[in-house]
Amino acid sequence: MIDPIEAIKEKMIMVCKILQKQRVIDGYGHVTARLADGRILSTPHMPPGKVAVRDLIIIDGQGNKLEGAGEPNGETSMHTSIYKARPDVQSILHYHADELIAVAASGQGIKVLSNAGVHFYRGTPIYDSPLLIRNHQLGDKVAATLGDRSAVLLRGHGGTVVAKNLDQLVRRGLDLVRSAKLQIMASALGSLKTHSDEECEQMIKGHEGGDAQRRFLDYYISEVVD
Ligand SMILES: [Zn+2]
Image 1 (cartoon, helix red, strand yellow):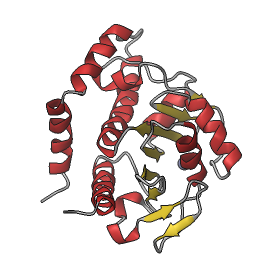
Image 2 (image 1 turned 90 degrees about the vertical axis):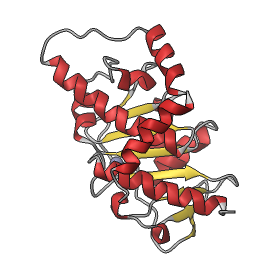
Image 3 (image 1 turned 135 degrees about the horizontal axis):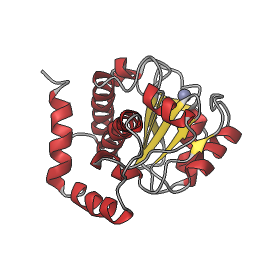
Image 4 (image 1 turned 120 degrees about the vertical axis):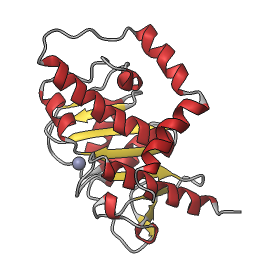
């Protein structure tokens, strides 16, 4: 049987490769996952798309490194603060995609104008500072801005997505950037017609069917596996 921590490490590397291939991460950004024992698996201080299993580190709830050769990311506090505030969150992606920065600069969150945006229908609040999240106080502020939502935008900086597992994280991570891109495209055409809450809730139920999620993930996995 595969060791569960090894399995989640392998999955995290796959998630990073997918995000890199789809160009939503670059030299920066980070992915973490809460382990069953409460410790946190994290990409180290290096471009996440270039990370191998041997590079991954394990940190405690305060961000101190427990295992691994690499160093924690400078914005580790954002992750630890969110895990502390949100027992339901098991994985987090933080990234700096251009589309997220553009939408955050408009002062509006993500508007649900496509089915890719339905995960975000309860709002994507904007953390109103471009400064990096380098200590627990700032981490706690981001966590408070996120509240019980699926994602928070950081003005002039990027965005942070939370999920119940790494499969859901990759979907939400890609769909948030796609939603921002569509919003930018559609805004140029005039006023936007958006989904109702009820339409979003129905679509989310459909996403939760095993098949729909599997097909989404298998496509992106096939793009990074020979
Ligand atoms: Zn950042």
